[in-house]
Image (cartoon, rainbow, N blue to C red):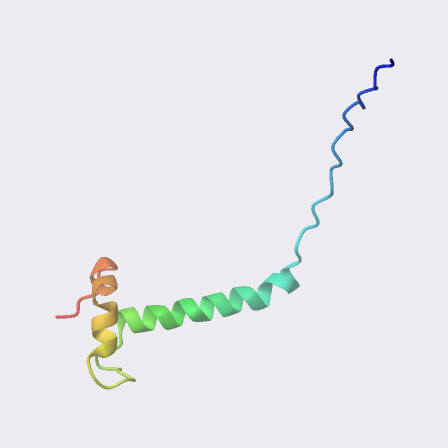
Length: 74
């Protein structure tokens, strides 16, 4: 009766992290920036003098966010 050999643990393989180029990030950064500006417009200015959408629906949806960010609305 022989003993079975327990294999020695192998060293973990380390993979290199490749940096992401600015050319690859730029379109996503522009897209996220545009979405942030649109959100800021709807929270901060919609239903005021520059309202694009008639009615009070947008105002009611962003009302608490407006107060949280310090925008006056009443």
